[in-house]
Image (cartoon, rainbow, N blue to C red; front, side, top):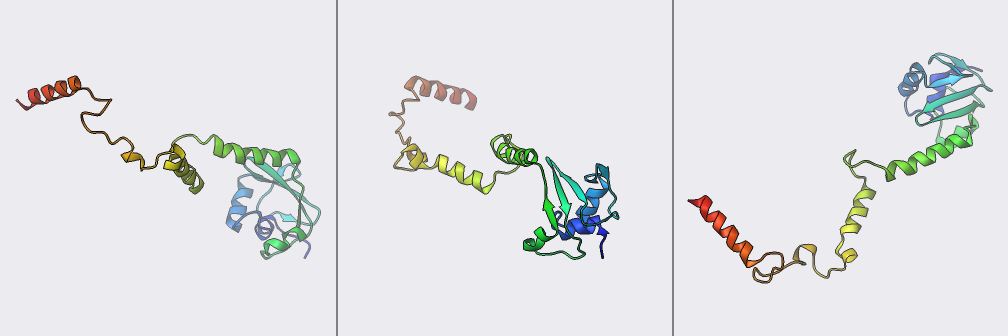
Length: 164
């Protein structure tokens, strides 16, 4: 057996999680051989160079051997050689870094890491309070520097007018 379907090989070598996803990638033109889009039924043989576009980068693999069944991750290097260019791999690293730093507000839920960082930021130890944040401003009515007696009288007058 010197040839195997490309969708089956992409699945067997763990480039795609399922064979259906590998088939769809071929149909959508994300898998090329020699710059030409390939159908899922295209037969490949050792020595072929396959380009797989998984945004934001394009991976390039050389087929070392063909196989029909999925193999363990440790055996994958026996069947393919990753010859992706260095600039594509650097682009991937930049996207990984940039994706977290420039995540716009409201896009997606915070990750567990985001939650831990927010909790650490709002932790009372960060602010230096000995008591919980809610009790940090526990003033009596007459001691409150943010509320004057004139403002209190004006508020009571407004409430009396609404009540009549």
